[in-house]
Amino acid sequence: MKRLLKIHTVLILLGVLVVGNTTGWSITTNVATTAGQFLKIGVGTRATAMGEAFVAVANDASALYWNPAGLGLLKHREFLFTQTKWIADIQYSFLGAVMPLKGRGTIGGYIAYLGSGEMPVRTEESPEGTGETFMVQDLAVAVVYGVPFTDRFSFGMAFKYIGEKIWHMQAGTFGVDIGIHFKTYLKGINIGMNFANFGGKMRLMGEDTRFIYNIDPERDPNSTPNVVADLRTESFQLPMRFQVGLSGPLPRLFASSLLRGIWAVDFITPNDNTPYFNVGTELYVGPFLTLRLGHRWIFLTDREGGFTAGLGFQAYKPKSPWKLYLDYSYLGVGRLQEAHRFGLRMQF
Image (tube, rainbow, N blue to C red; front, side, top):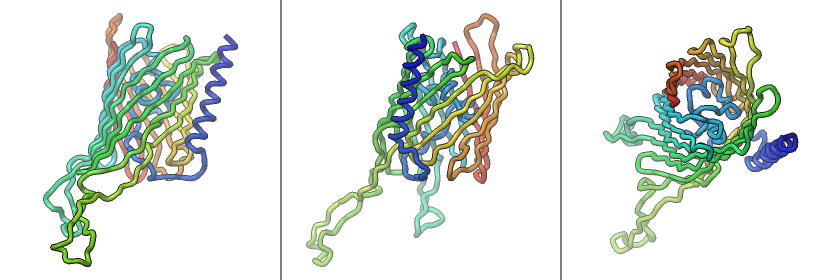
């Protein structure tokens, strides 16, 4: 057993070193250099209320996003839906499901969609609008698999398609998430690690880049052939994120088992900003009520806000395999005011 623990520890340390070198740990900020920014919006009211410190927790269906290795911990089928009222009236929806495969791991999948709603087309000649409208739409579709190699060590991967559309322009690519989860021998402390959004680049293309090019403007335009051409747009990487964290049980405040909870701390290094920390806690008040607090983006450059909070309600019948969870989370985003999430999770 000690030898197995040493092997797991070495694997985790090697992963930290390799991924850290790949993503380029530095104090240089690379804000606005990646595509698919909606992939950075957290999923699940539980995780987001805990300051998005969830990579080492990852014990519900939101592990589809936070750490695919967490699927190896799940023993029941789960369904998760969250609706986020994001800044500037943007709506973000997430629908996911997981199903254990009877000793062969757990498979799952999700669809994430972000929409701006209809907006008027404005031009320099028509600043009040041309009468046309357009939308910004983002989509991610993923298949996720997690498997426990031992009773303490789990591994998982997510394969996903990412697409963006802005009026007549669109881009798409594929990405992969790779995660591990390890239950240590230290009083219930867990270690989690996830390398998210490793994949191809995205390049917007479409009819808005097309124009008529006159190959010889000095000649008679009636005799010079015109060419239909496309402007070359740049390609941008996905917002890769390496996230490693710890979680564990809170000290019992009272002798009663009705008041207990967990804590979590994550370290994140993205490829388009500086490294930062997320912290969070979850307190179970009796069998039906849960309170959550957290703070994300600690030490992050170019940020707005970071305080998070939320609560959850659990409903179930004794000895019934069905459990229903209703959750809410709040995120303060500084001068951008706040974001609200509402979630529904079913376990059966």
